[in-house]
Image (tube, rainbow, N blue to C red; front, side, top):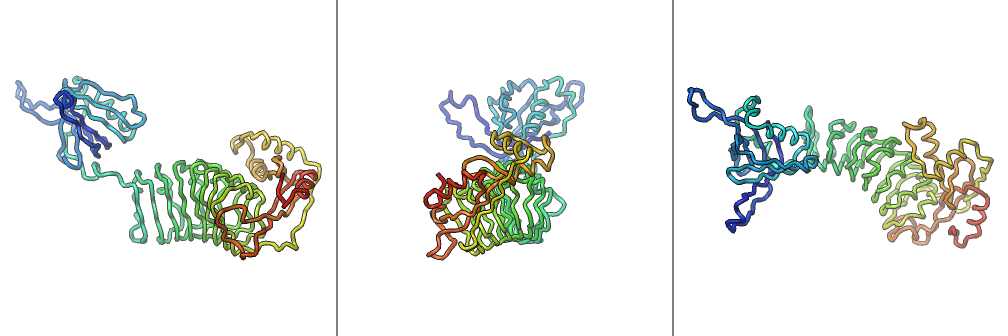
Length: 420
């Protein structure tokens, strides 16, 4: 049985001899096996069980006899892939790190069997480790040609950064979604048409680049998955997206968002809930208004140039105030009390309805019964760097939703159109 991990070997007697241990962690392959020794009294060849430690410097490996030589095994941090094996002769401690916890547990269970039980276990003969077993795991892979794209085999499970560009990919394969520790995924300049819902499970992904594809929509389920909490950089520029899902604002930790050169007609009403957003690019779309909630953001830079914003003469108020339905009242209570909900608890249609809730400037929520107001927004107050308008233009139309006439009067009486 073999175990791939990092190992540090320490001589316990070194400090007493005034010798400093300077051994560094090395990628290693550990194996438990038998090796034929001298013949016993009855003429048969006896087989001794050894622990073999192979590293890049010592491919043939260092053998530690296990029969009556294993002193102790420390496995307190087994769930973190760490353990320590202590042998009597030579007086060495083997510190194991970065091992797969299930594999490490199985390896140590064999090691702890004891001399008699080990003799009954079927073990292979000891052979030096392969180069692939002791090489440092590959963490970064970049593919820029179709001919280099691997077919029929999985990607290395140790990858943290994967870039596949200009390879004419039509879809995001399940092999990519099975990489557990992936931090950065760059699939720019391909021909991907849709984002699979299973991508929502990528709980470690912090950067997703899908620039220059043929994506038409962002799945709403993506915004409810584990990826919504981990993602910090999202590049969807140069695609064909017309509308972002209403629950897009679940990407609470998003810092950098690129939406350039799509077909967006509007941004979600609750866009201002992306409180950690610092860089926003949405140029070259079909935006006519911005959501007023964007005024809550503290941006470093914003680019909304090359959009057909409404001119000031067409700004108006649309009054849809009516007696809210029982469904709306229940939805308002759920949003106001911040009750969590999911498709497992409520019908899918109700989850979509709750996601469309609009937050009034006073903090209350509303649905169809509201005042739809076009509010002047000074774009230069949103960010330090603005790439949007002509030098003389600073006001853009923003879309706000008010829950009552009282809120409308407060907004109209506020100086400079700022809510107080």
